[in-house]
Picture 1 (cartoon, rainbow, N blue to C red):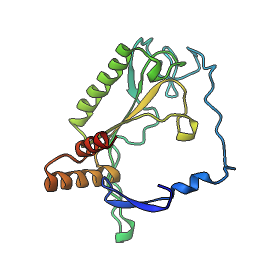
Picture 2 (cartoon, rainbow, N blue to C red):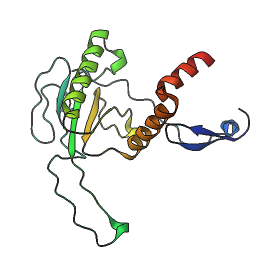
Picture 3 (spheres, rainbow, N blue to C red):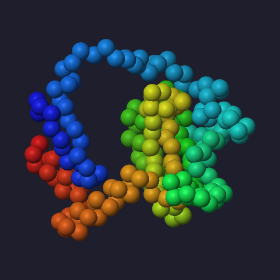
Picture 4 (cartoon, one colour):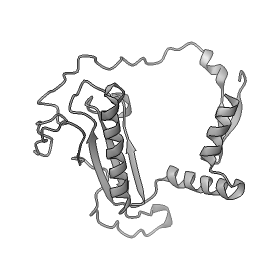
Length: 203
């Protein structure tokens, strides 16, 4: 633990350098300010609030629980045109289609998901399951994720997440699918289940 070494990452089938001793060096890097604590509960100018107008001119309903809507600035669209054929193998492109949605967890902007009640959290999880099932019927990959903080690309403090469904498996998902299938085939047990059992037994 005190000296550099490489550790095997079974999900990625590669080795990662670990230099634990480097955390002892003096830190003169950037410090981030904590998120503001004075976020208003409701702000008519916040496009994720109930009753507010979004960038595309649509007005949100006065929702009281979760609220799902198509992302106004989607990274993926279902009707994107085919890319042009390439005249060289180093400059290939392939079609990428999909759907991007936004899901607000709660009508109040001054909450985060862990601060909501258990029934409210359950409603969020149920909505995630419904979205995954609905979009998974048409797309091979559905990813639900939440960016936290401006540093991570979150542009709005209102409690919300992104839901992306795509016509292709992203690189990491493709790789992890292959390594997990290989592990199951060789050892007869799902990799992540075995890993969790090993972590529990080793404490």
